[in-house]
Image 1: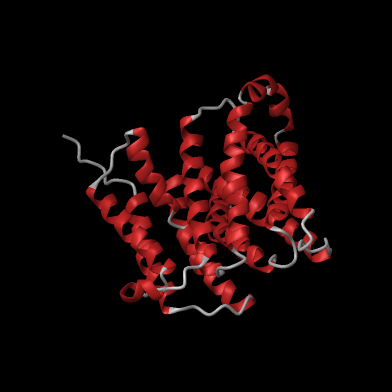
Image 2: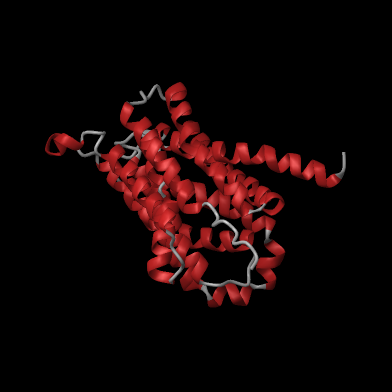
Length: 304
């Protein structure tokens, strides 16, 4: 087998694996309730992942140290959005909502990003994408209201779903700023610098959290969950996704992300014994096609 063929086979395998690695974060978030505080978990996750990323990109980070320092404000803002609101927000929300809700609401982020890119960056938006936005956002609302559209006044709103919507919006703004602010760093080095900014943001919240009387004492299970969050949905998913994208191209790999809610739903049912409701299935049936319509590349125009 040639080297190119082996690389392609590995990349094809990884596009099935990376969404499963990202799905681990929803399971970790639910398992961490009562074991480790959400801000402490987020801090530990990105401190470990950021350190490993910095080791991988240490030569580049040293060469570009002046550029990194000159852009420190950007890394703080990106760390606040990506690791602070988005990272810790998922763990805060997991205390009162289900893993499937986490995954489904979060999966609408590409739709929000595409819509915000039209408004903020002036990117083209087709009618097909408009239909996709409507489908995906309807699906998110269907999950949040638990399918009870005709009895909204009686729906018991879950605070965790609100945190997940906030985390999703923060991720959308993070992604747009990442695209808008150009950087001389590679993707690995830039994520290491952003992780450092996130650690700086999360540190005071984690210290405050650990000083609260209700905060659980640190035990071995907290260490296991923190390392799992850092190595699997943090470093592992990032490296697997990046490798596949370099070999196969962004459009093919992006489609694999639609598997995330399906993996999360299966894992939540098997590991957490969380029931799958009809509103979850209906939400997925709206969100996943909506994401596909928004992110699918436009058809090529025939040559004139």
